[in-house]
Image (cartoon, rainbow, N blue to C red; front, side, top):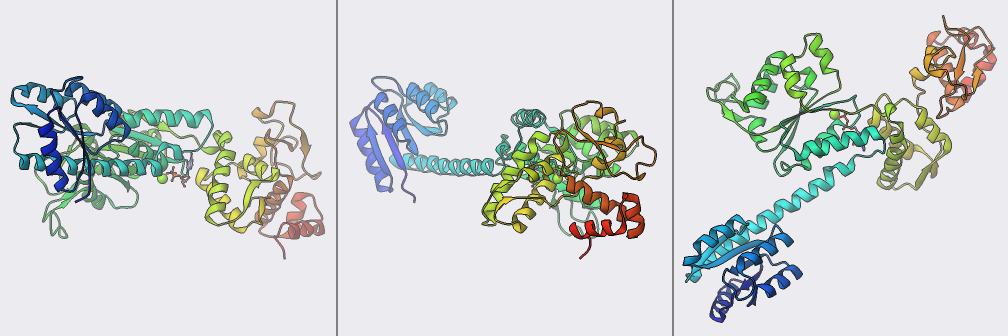
Length: 483
Ligand SMILES: Nc1ncnc2c1ncn2[C@@H]1O[C@H](COP(=O)(O)OP(=O)(O)O)[C@@H](O)[C@H]1O
Ligand SMILES: [Mg+2]
């Protein structure tokens, strides 16, 4: 038996003595005090595992001591010691959070049992609390990095949702924007944190399997159902189910999910009775559910049910302020993981990151930095291996005629002096985006595009870039297209 710290508070010397004798024999460290004032002073200085607290005390009474102890440490375990005529007060004490009470005169063996039960429960709740804190450290909101207003708004709503009773949450955002991350934070910073968090990918399983995964099945429901099996809705009781890629859920199952959300009950496959459970559903999708509703692939009623609290995580390119903080975070993380001494990004690398469109969002950024750290030289990250995003080289977007390039402050420079311009555009004048570009990246990408367009025909590619074949070959070597 673990040695527990017990504080006995009683003004009768005989009682203090007999309790101390019995509990010390059980291996506990027992301290005794006579007054409520002493009890509060001692317990707030060094919190005991258990307090045995007399109700009637000379100064502040037991109830007031209980109040003060609970205010100081809500998790403290207190057993009240009462005279029989104080039963009403004992009930009041339970309401204030006392674990149990014993009435005087008590049988010492009965007291020992109550003390042991209280200590066991105390230990269990300490353990649960420890694990809860560990999971918050591991999965909490603090992991979500970003300084943009847009991301902060997302996190703010998510924090509110976590604390709320909301039964369903819908997360929408492109792949790699952090939907998994957010779903975990919502679960582990909610009162459900000590219950399971169960992620299920709706794309991965065929409809029938997904149904029996979620709802379970009765013995004999189908050929392989040799035994009754609980579904994840039952396993997750009190917790959260994360339905990822909800847009891929088949209509039959959508109907069952809707019934479940509306009635908080479901039936096992092959079952005849409803089973009710309390689970929170966090659904996520990278497709536009409203559009799927329009095209008839997703039930409108389920959409409305899920969409009570919609959270949309914007793509990284719409919150560029987050790029460098995220990059810095991953630089530190991977440098330490791979034991590499890389502390900063060159200006060039920063410009590259800021001008890239990140179609794979944070996941892509993370991978690019991981690669740079594994493959790069020590010191600083000079350059990142990034394709120049197609959209940034899109003729329409960067010609003088495009609607968002009206400002005059950006310097414009014609690219090449050949007629190899856009098929229909006006003069091929490119506008420098405010965050700058890396000219060599642009050049490299145009060369790649020209080679692709001409299926590797160097003469034609050179022509389309306004270069001689030799000038093209020189650049192809420079950029590693040729050995
Ligand atoms: N704001 C963020 N802060 C830190 N890491 C992030 C952030 N957003 C996404 N990530 C990381 O990017 C990767 C992809 O995130 P994930 O949650 O799996 O995206 P999704 O589920 O939307 O595809 C994960 O490694 C995740 O930890
Ligand atoms: Mg995901």
